Amino acid sequence: MQGLTRALLAIIAVAFIWLSALPPAIAQSTEQPVAQDTAPAVKIDRKKLLVQPRNKDGTVSQVSFFDDPVLWAREMQQSFYSRMSGTLRQMKGSSAFAATWTLMLLSFGYGVFHAAGPGHGKAVISAWLLATESELKRGILISFMSALVQALTAIALVSVLFLVVASVGSTARDVAGVLESASYGLIGVMGLYLVWTALRMLWPVRTPEPAAFAGVTPKQTIQLHSFETFEPMKTQGTSADHVHGPDCGCGHAHLPDAQDLRGDWSLAKAFSLAFAVGIRPCTGAILVLVFANGLGLYWAGIFSTFAMAVGTFITVSAIAAVAVYSKRLAARLVRGNGRLMEWLGFGLRLGGGAAIAFLGTILFLGSLGSTNAMM
Amino acid sequence: MTLRRWTTAWAILACALGASGPAVAHPHVWVNMRSDVVFNDQGLITALNLMWTFDDNYAQMAIDGLDANGDGVYSPDELEPLTKENMASLKDYDYFTVMRFNGEKQALGEVTESGQIWSNDKLALHFQVPLKTPLDPTKGEFVAKVYDPDFFIAIDYVKDDPVSVIGNIPKSCKLVVKPVPTDAEVEETRAMLSTKGPDWKPENNEDFGAVFAQPVTIQCKA
Image (tube, rainbow over all chains, first blue to last red; front, side, top):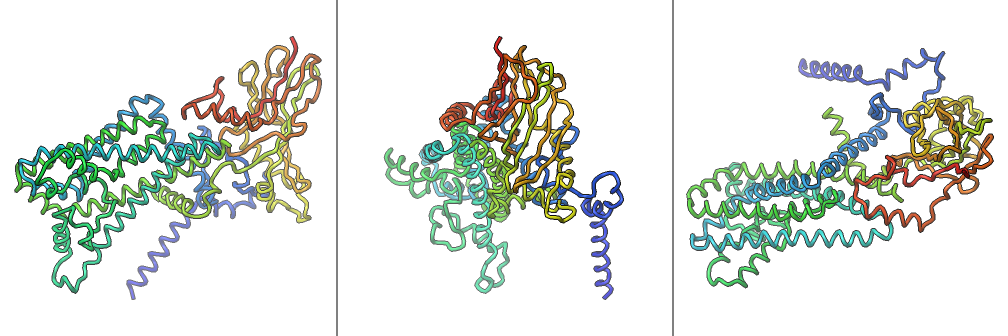
């Protein structure tokens, strides 16, 4: 009973503090009659103004959230967008060369860490544990070819996409505007997609059928679950709780299955393997291409995609080499970090996806405005 | 601050997912404009009179609740508080009016006459934007443009008799208003812009919106 009273008191106290901190909206409406003699009695709603007054430093003064939440949100979005696109443009404006290099470096880093990233590393290593030393060279060659094919696929896909959008758009609207809007829209969609895949990752972990696994802690379940991925390419369709969709990114397919590397070796087979692995373009590569295009740096996107491919290739080859030359170390890496990697992967996808979706949405909505105005 | 940001994030996501998306797009107010170039007795340009007639959506929203005496009529007196606030904030934007003399941007004086009229279900705001220093049109080229560089307000001249002259215009001078661009001209501008990068800026330190504004010029024979 005492606890309840204390809780109620706490709630009242919090409510009181919150109310007293409520800005002008309430304060003004009660004070208004006092200031009647000078200003007219009518209070003009700020949304009626043609334009919002500016502060002394030239910035537009913000409507308070409590005055008008809709107008406030609109203004916040506008200022967000103009600041963000300003920064992007500035980066490009100061030197297209610098922007290109930055993007390439980022892509390279992305490629390196992406291939080493959660889930992917262990798939790569486990594949290579099954490979023998003599097949290392072939594996590296095929990794290189797959990375290249993957880059080319992404470039072809995005280029065709933008050509289509441009040809449709040019009849009705400003080409650059439509391309920009399309780019930002795609970035937003991709972010939402990442969030979705992250949430999908969560389901199998959260539903570990307690009856069947009586006495097994979630930790053990996850270890079992990661053990299943020991043969990454084989798990497709066979395991209900680890679904390999196209959303698994480049990683799972960066490397051909060790089984496929054995036996007869021909250039034709190498090509077909590399093609099979690389035909599904990497989301990261698409993102970079789309983003660069939005900035008006089409070629920077292409260079960056190749930089990313090189980064992926280096990591995969390095892991392969490590795996082959110290199988025990690799085995330990696989076992120890399984759970951590799962959660890291989940967090990265969810957080990164949300951030990308947010960025894309703001940029998209903001660009819609300027596109319409061009007409 | 973080709380604010998150609220915005949600608001924006809600906007993106909901049907309210298009409402976010510019412009928010459409204006049909008439203007006068004002000359003094000495034949100098002293000011620009502007008359803005607003679109019905904005007008309804703006006059809502301003019928103080409840007689069903929105008199200029009743609209005055709104006029005052609008003129005060428009000042921060130089009334969206740019007057150039030989390419030089001219300083503006204090707006003197302003008011709003509600008639025939239309709301119109009128005001006079004076030049700080009167200009002799025979000594250079006078160009006036009225536009919102952010396209928040779409300002267009009316088709018939958009601009007139008030006062003593020198005999050798005449008023020229560039007509509303034809579809072909708009297409030309579009084609020209599509060849430029996103960082492209018009000449004379003008901003982007100036490209789309209809210029009013006073042309004098030498």
